[in-house]
Image (cartoon, rainbow, N blue to C red; front, side, top):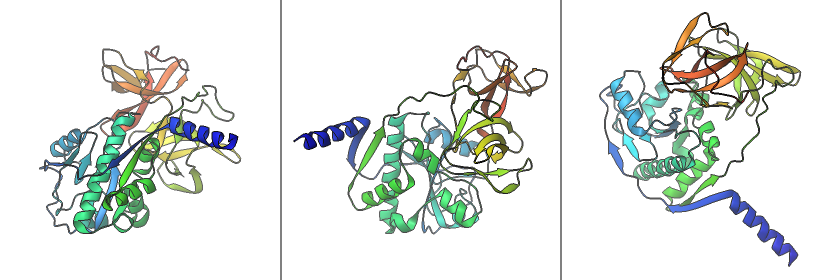
Length: 354
């Protein structure tokens, strides 16, 4: 009897940690809004689907569609999926530009929109809509998830025409995995229900004191994949990488090259090197926790605030890295994407965690 009670207690504890929602999957409605810009107009006979994530926190499917319709960037996708539904921007029989030449010529593309940071409710809806869309397309073509569904990471690693690793870290951030997504798509193809699980995150204490060997306290963590160490020109250094799960200190971001100077742990001590700026893999401890005031403010290259380097918009939320000479160094977003530039700010009393 005591043993049964312990087992029951354990089950209750597990259920208290997660909220489950079991749903029967149906075909999600597709809102067709074909773009006029970023089109190939080349015939596509698809043999599968590549799933991506946008790495653009809070931007809806409509936001993404309107951007690619307005601005020529030499990139596009067939479907954008958010918490509101699905928007198709390229016809399914036309090539989109999403994962390099081979992939573009052979695969449809689904972009999972990133919800506002930490919004589990929005993520669950994005996940559900993605499963429904992918399953519906697979049913139409007689495909299955094992042979016809691929991640951008797989395409990058296999054909080496891009270096993107999505959507692995995006899924991990919300308690999912690539294997789980593929299994849920297959379950949906088979007419089975899927579980949407929302793990409750425990608040973690962040150490604000410099860890031994680091110049400043760790301010980020690598999540989702390893990052190769490179020299200042971007060339890979053989045998060196930052491991998935490592806590690191981001020191600087080269805006022109999009290389991040980091300090990272090794078995022989802390080392320094550059990694590619992959926002989906570099998770900052204090993401968006500094808010600029009501006026546009400059950012500076150095802590002496002599050389202007950029500016923060009114009320813009940016990410603190460390303090030097009492001045706060922050990373912020630009036209190049999320977390693509850093600099020092003059007024930094809005942030007091270090």
